[in-house]
Length: 284
Image (cartoon, rainbow, N blue to C red; front, side, top):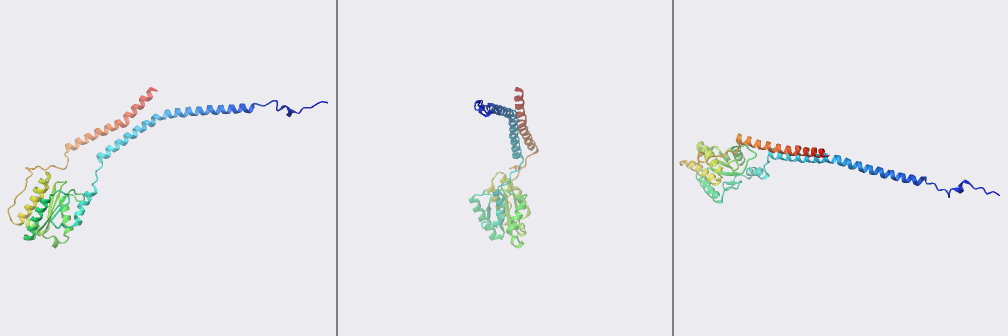
């Protein structure tokens, strides 16, 4: 009796190896492809790292150049205190003791002497004078415009300001101004007013003798009101007043220095990084 073996009975004896070889082949291909990608990414990083460094140098150079231009050309804005003080003077109204030292340059002795002198002349001649010091003007072009503004604000009608006078001293600009109503100007006279503004206030303020500038101006005005001889004031030939504006030569010199600074920054920002880049490329 013959035994017939089916084809399925040979399967356990012969084990196919095709699946394991495929798995090994696939894993090998994946490993090779990953290694190639890593090498390509490294080469790309190396090839592009230098331009990024050069771009970074250029950005820093441009930032330095922009900062230098901003420092030299941007105007310095006045502080809030400087802008507020001149408007505070307008809003405060006339001082009770004749003196409003907003600039803070007058001594207590000077204020006391001014109060005594001005109070005495008002009681005798009915002429009221206020002295105002301010550090800097930002709303008006000069001291005369500001003095007129103070007079109109403190004494809005002609009757109120008829016998009133305002003396303004601007310490930063080394100049002063005097204004007043019709009775005040008539009591002193145009000649003494002009001489006080052009001599006592600016000449002594240039030497930062603010106490002497204010007190000598008050004595000169009071002497004119009392009809006494004019005591006079310091002359420009004895005290040369320095100009607040730069000369043409100083401006040209400053401009030349700035051009050198800008040129140096341009060299640092562009030439040096490019030289480093080409040196690196030539080595490779």
